[in-house]
Image 1 (tube, rainbow over the protein chains, first blue to last red):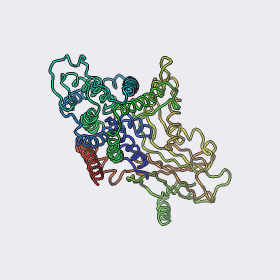
Image 2: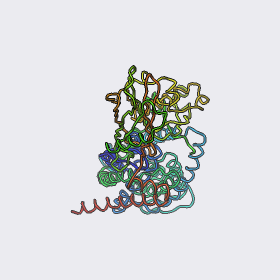
Image 3: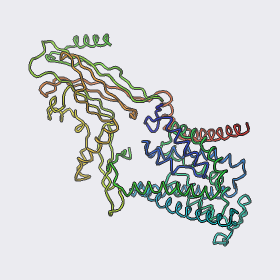
Image 4: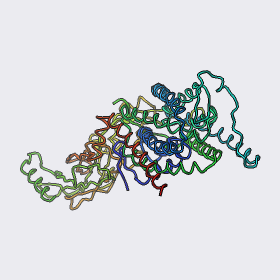
Length: 307
Length: 258
């Protein structure tokens, strides 16, 4: 069934969009990532104009994250206090990111920079996570199936002032590291047009030392607000949010997110992490190949700006 | 439609100017507007008409018909990638094309080269190559024509540019008809349909009409809202997103309980 999108101004198959939304929704629920880093390139691929894809994707992430976070609220795996600290950082970062984005746009080559950002971050994050998870699995096998001892080594994170108790995460750390993580993720989210979960989740696990189960719900909680902010920004300045496209994606997405959350709860933390790592590395590899291999069509069309 | 045709002919006969000695086009359209609805999936427009003449059909070279349909023109930026430091592919050259139609179809009764001379083509801008205006392009890059070729190649692939040689059928050198297929990714605006009658490659008569392509219903409402009440539109999008998220969560809760 073909459906015409009023803002994107193209006609696409409704079931294709529902399916895409569903698959990305499952991943989003499983890993606590918004799925934007997967969905945005997929939307480009089916011919949605990039500006519309990025803006609409932000709106869709609000829906799938909201659906996911409710499931986590019921299991009490959301650290509201930590989420709020990250959110404050995230909004600051997003505002900064928009400034950086506009500066880069004026300098030209913003597309290339966004892609290089993707490749670098996805590569580093995915690689580190993959190695770490492999080691964790190997260790737990050696120990005869007993869970690995909780790593609570004191690092630089614990040496900072303004300590705060995060009861749900079982942490007593300074608010500065979560704030910095929030700001950095916010900047990247605004530049790369994604929720930023795929960077925040590893940062919460490895830098802040939060337990994996709490990380996902908390990251979803923060993503809702950052992407809602981004959606409003795109809707009022670029007029690129396509609500028909968003509805189709989110109907699939919210259902997928519920299924994903159930799957995620039945899996071991190390398995979850290794899967997320593989997925991140796969997207990274695809983007890197696009930059390295000669494209089929060297030319591309764009609307002339400023009219 | 026959009614309309005959009234048109009558009108033309009444207003017959003194110089109209030769052959003239009388034109009809299956529809003078295209409505973009939610289920819009492209459209086919039937363009037909007749040749009106006062004398018997002239002998010699047969009459030929060329029909063009052009969408609204806009400027387009064409970028070309090149390998940067032998490493990655980067957009390096940019050329701005002043005017390129969003849609362009040209249908003829025979190969274009045989029905239209180059001078006539240049004057009336009939073929695709002349419909795209790139005056300033030459100063942007040394090989500007390759950028114009790129537009044609990319849009032809998308079905936005069509050359339909031999697709116009002409009966008794009097009645002609053709069908133009418009793809689903149409831009809104006024589409201009032109009909040329040629003999020996010379244009002897032209006629022009407009087909309005417009969004209607929900499509129109959403589009207008997003431009004029963008804050409201943004809030509406967010409300839908949150409602859908909550709805799915509540539905699954119910399912699990049973």
